[in-house]
Length: 80
Length: 339
Image 1 (tube, rainbow over the protein chains, first blue to last red):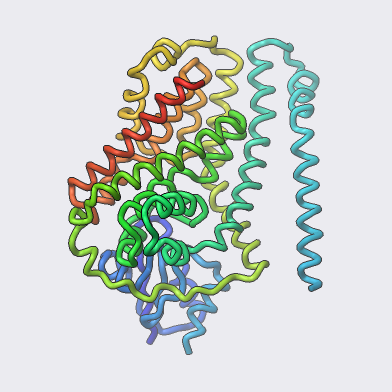
Image 2: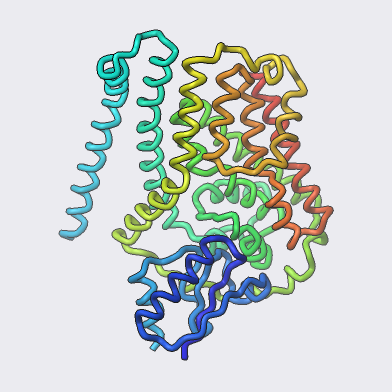
């Protein structure tokens, strides 16, 4: 099961990323759990400076923007 | 190679098309207002309508072009790269570099805090970090394009130059005050992590990002721009000059501090404040006062103070605001004097 984390302090882009990720993961038929991380210390521990960011199974996949649908599916699928 | 060729051809065609439309806007506005709508030349309504029909598409086209260009330039600069460039730099040179990088590094106000922490823990001096944080939200391409499109290159250039000056000086002064102890302690306990994998996009990727930027930014601000131009059109056609000169004119020395103080509790992005700027300038307010007001609204805001409170202790937060406010006032005074 993939662990998906959305890092962000609650700005509209963070919600957009969460929604887009849910849709993409759903389309790929992935088993996943999604978590929204708003605590700054935790966000910083990933070394992320620009929110929103997407973390898949502990690895930061994208930061600072909401990727397009196709790109999101690639990022979610790539980690085997 | 074939791919690049297609891009270049498309790019040139696009530029030519853009230029053709752009150069026909003025005659088109005149034709539409006075021939098609048959309004009277020299009438209030005629002036206003011609102004609007000319300015609205002109500003939107400029905006799209510049946002696209800057969007592509930004793909060459990531916050991680900026941090690497700035870390360990001496003050002064570092302040100037940080202010300049603030213009081209992508920045969203929600990222202000993570960026601050990321910079400070990676060895970027505090003052240099502040120079970046002041320049990034304030000196942005939307503000510059709107100012250029509506008031000409001199005003836009002024805003750019003074914005950078303020970022450099305020950041430098804060650095000199050696207030590192006034950053919240937990900030220094965070370890700089690995960050997102950094891959350089291909050229087609960059162009796509430029296009995304246009969709996103123009999509956000177009309504404000139209409102602003409508306000300007109304003023252009109807309001007698020098209406505001008594309160915000050059002779009134306290108009500058007042403008800056007024700007603090107000918060707006660059596009939203332009209608107000237009109204004030059109009614005779002094340029220095209006620029000071605009900068104060964008750079100093209560929401930003609340966000920054998480990483800055009250003294440093107050110092930051105070120094930026003073710098903006100084610039406002200077311009009223010089112009």
